[in-house]
Image 1: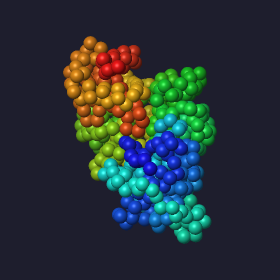
Image 2: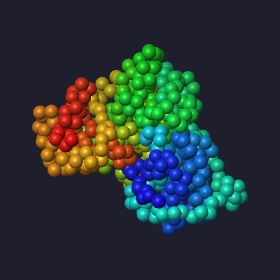
Image 3: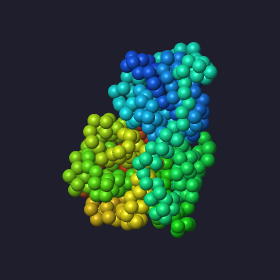
Image 4: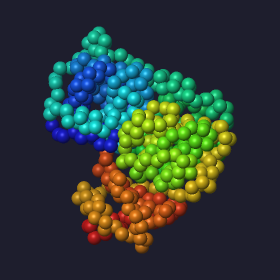
Length: 468
């Protein structure tokens, strides 16, 4: 059996190649043994819309039951935040989500959630990983045996999440504000809850389709052209919202059908939470987030901490400190007053509440942010290159060889997680290998999208020069 490694957000692998029933059993057994070592006895498990999700979930549940662990299992596909919230509501010791999040449809995965309702901490994941056996125990319990023994209980995680939303948002205010929503589920697990919350919304890709029509369900601009066109062709729409496969990430569009990236959403969240809701706390962002967040946080006298890539690092801080806003470039955002978990639907509701309370459009609110920190644009390229070339590029970054990009001198470099090259206070390029896919990510910030595109193209040349 092959070695199984957890990335920045769980174990992910290609279905039928490495993501198999036997390997899911191995990971489940390791998790169960880790739980028993710590005298943990209750677990919540769920699955999203990916191929085989229900089957893999049932296989995993049977392994846990075989070790005497009580399993609360979702009765249908659910989002990752629904499982995380369920862990807290049922006072469970751990959560498991069968999902590969935003990865291509050929993948599935296995996420672990701690008892506080967020990602399991890195040290605990490393310990689970160390316990993965070469082969797993063959004895499995049937559904009837599990139910008869009191080791399996089906629960409605979506209903629990819905009631939680109703108790935290003024849905009547949002609905009566006149806001018209367009929503793209990307065939993911957010489809039913958003349809339930906003039955009059313009819905895209809100059907069960495990193939995702071949599109990786990542809510970034290049994957959401239909949503953008829907808004542009319908002037009544005020806002576009998209979620990834397990609905913990967010994509956003303004009233003109223009993409609003996570950097801007983070700034909007901090602006709303601090100035309108009068809440206080620390700001925690991952390494790839815009430096404009530091500027706004300092304007508000909020402490700022920059972490490695991966929401688990933010979640760990949220469990120990008073965090107002936390987030990462890839669309995983969290705020005070909710579980320490990224949640694309929840963040979308906050933005809608902000718009409803102020009577302002997303573009108007964004312009108010620009008045405080200056305007900027951002984009990212994902380079599918050979492992050899990827390693050579990272070595070049580490050696200090990148001294200029597109004729502009690198004035400073940061290397918290990957390499960020600053060309000015408002222009930077960052390079980092993905922790979940065979991809090299190249990020850039500049004054406008044309300048960002030039900067990314120049970065590709600088990084790969003479490395053929």
